[in-house]
Image (cartoon, rainbow, N blue to C red; front, top):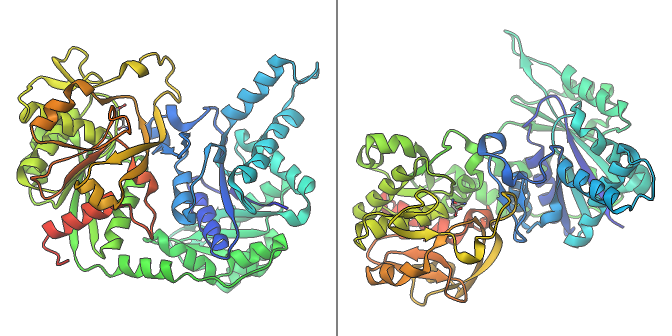
Length: 536
Ligand code: GLN
C-alpha cells in the first residue's frame, strides 16, 4: 500500500514548502522507507522550460530530461534520490491531457468538467508516481498558497484522495508563517488560523502544522495554534529561520516531525542516524578559511536563478571545510569596468549557463583573465562555450570566432547548432536535455576528478562545439577531455598548463549532493582554497 503526504502552504508564497517536503523526505528515507517527491505547479505552462529566470528562477533538469521546478532540486539534494518527469505536474500538463482525451473521444460524449475530469486526471498523475519511483511513501507538494483560484482543482483532488485511499494512507502537512508585527514585534497566529480555516472549508484538515517564524514559538503560542486549528499540540512544528538550510533535517527530527507523520500513516517508526548531516553542518559552521569565488553571469541579483550552483559550491566548500564567499558579478558591468578591476584578488572564477547575446563579451573577458592570471576556472554549459570562443580568438588565432547563437555571420562559428538539431521549431523541450554519456580522456584532470572513465551528466542547451574546429583547438593546446562516445560532441575541455581550468557542456550542479559534493565543484573549491593560501 502506498502512503501519501500532501504538503500545502498558507499565508504567503515562498514559505519553504519545498525545503520542508525535502527534509521530511530525508527523515523518512533515513528510516529505511523508499520515498519519492512530487511538485504540483498550478500554472498553465506545460513545464518550467519556457519561463524566464525572473518568473521562475532556475529550471531544474532531471536525468530523463524534464525541465522542472527548482523545488525538485531541493528534493534531490536533501533526500538524495534521482527524480523523473512524473515528479513535476502542472496545470498545463493536466489540461493538455484532458483536452487531448476529449478530442480523441475518450469521454464518450460526456460534458468534460473540472470535477470529475480534471480532478481525475490530477489523481492519476499523483497515483502513477510511486510506481515509476518504486516508492513506499510519496510526498506531494502543492505549489502556491491556499486561497489561490488556480490551486483549487488540486486541493479538491487531494481531498478526494483521502477518501479514495483511506484516512490512514494520507497525511496532510500545512506550512504557514507566524509573523512578528508592530513596534513591540508581537507574534501573530491569526494568519495561520485563517489559512487553516480556509483549508478546512475546502474539506482538508491538516494533521501537522509547520510554522515558519523568526523567533521561537512559545509554549503558549503552540497551545493556542493547536486549539484554534484543531491539531495535536505535538504536531505543531517550529520552522525557525536559519542561515544553514542543511540544519533543518536535524531541527525537524528533534521535534519529531517524521515520527508524527509515520504515526498518522500507521507506519512503524525506526531509529534514525543523522550524524552525516550533523557533520555537514559542523563543517559549514567551522571553516578553516575563506576563498573568494567570482560568479560572472547575467541574472546575478536573482539567487534562485542559480540555486543549484550556489548549493553545489557550498557542497564543495563543506567537503574541504572552507567557506566559499561567492561574489556575484554582472557580466555587462564587467564589460564596462574591465576584468582586472572586478576580478583582481579572487580565488576562483565561474561562468554559469545562460542564453542570448547580452553580457557575453564580459564573460569572455572574465575567462581570458582566469586563463592568463592562473586563477582557477570552472565553466558550466555556456561557460564552456565562452571558454572555447575565448581560446579560439586569443590562442588559435581566429579573431572573429563566436557562437552562431550570438553572431550568425561569424567568420569562425566555433560553437554552432549541429545539422542533426536544426529541424527544431518549437521552443519547449527541444534542447539536448537530460543525462548523456561522456567518455573521459586518460590522464586528464576530468578523469582524475571524477575517478572514472565514463560518466553521465545532465544537459540543457542547443549549441555545441563545432566538430570542424576540434582539431584546431587541440593543436593550440586545449584538451577536449570529455566527449560523447562517438567523439562528435565535446562535453569537457581543459587547459593542462593552468592550475585549474575546466569547463563542461553539462550542468553538473544538478547532481551535487550536500554530503557527496560533485567532483568538479569539489575540485574547483580545492583549487580556489589553494589559491587563497589555505593549507590542504
Ligand atoms: N545558450 C547556450 C545553448 O543553448 C547555452 C545554454 C546553457 O548554458 N544552458 O547551447
